[in-house]
Length: 321
Image (tube, helix red, strand yellow):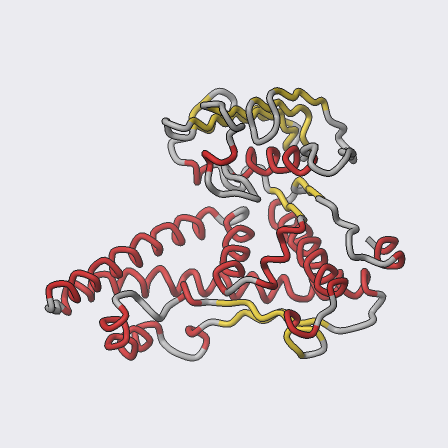
């Protein structure tokens, strides 16, 4: 799969851009601040219905304009697909495939799988568990529609349960039957999410370690571990044990929405013990593994977007990449 043409109107710093691209490698060059990253981000947007860099749509519209439009022609499995996306300050975002509106944006996720490597990826290491969960969700959602729908429904049920806990606190009351309805939903959906995250990480880790070894010249060992409360405890028991804490905090403190990924180098936390070069190598290897993984599952190559990939790398690691 590749991008044949790209058209941009009022997106970030661009008024109007029309590009015809190569089916092989395309390089955008220029001074800092001219918008090279924004070109890559526009392709990501057409694939994922949102920016890789800024999820707030209004902030991606060029300053002083009321709307932005992105259009791309993609060659996918011998067929050309035309994708259109419009963002308005006062209207709902619209995404079309071959001039036909999507009923739900989630229907488009995974149709044009994409992997982006960016300096922003450093947030995976420096940020908290939410960033790592989002990473897992972004990858799995691109090849598993059921997972994405399950995740959406889980988050809705979680929000309803949290709202109920707030009402209980405000009214100084408690209705176990009402809470149990949402507990059952969380248990059903959360167990499915957990099962698919386990499968994903188990399959990804050896590919990731292979790529890290190539780029680093086998100079150190790295690990990636999926951490979840559900590994050792039944979800129902988790909710029961956390009930008093949930009532006090007025939100749900246990479940798959608390999952995490542990990044290590030589069995020590990567965040504290990895150099800048090692951390960057870790992230690039992780994204290359993601690319290989999605390619294997989908049966065709995703789009690979590389933004300032060689920064912080020595000559040897640049050559390996």
